[in-house]
Image (cartoon, one colour):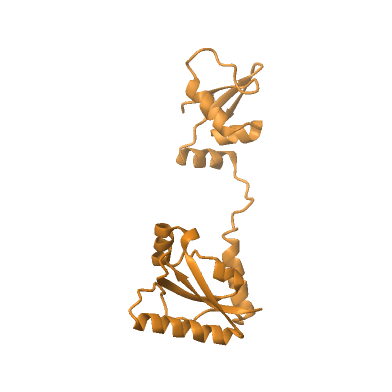
Length: 188
């Protein structure tokens, strides 16, 4: 796979960033970790940024070229936004099994509570603490009470936004309800 050193330039041709990478990285202009780079993209528009690239025969050569370009441009007084002196990529880094496992866990996220079933009392307390709205649902003489709109929507197979809109209209002319259900807020 070929490696490249590349330069991002403003529409007038002024260089503002030097990088190193493969063909995909060269064409990908956003650098979310670099606010200065992102500000230039926002100012001129990503589609207006010019890209110059130079193919290198090895990764080491692309690192050297990146470092050399950064050093030369800074010496010339060109205000580039690179955060480092270059050549500090991690491609080809060999990580221990422990390090790889730790990185994998970081991508998975906190799963300790995933799939946990809460008691009715706990769900009610959580709903109240989050500002949930207890509702009463009536259809064909049957009345059900729910701790929150989202719980009612989930259990009845309805859209929570529709229930909320229905509750906002209560008090106006007679309502048809949602799929036969009529909702009202319950004050505790």
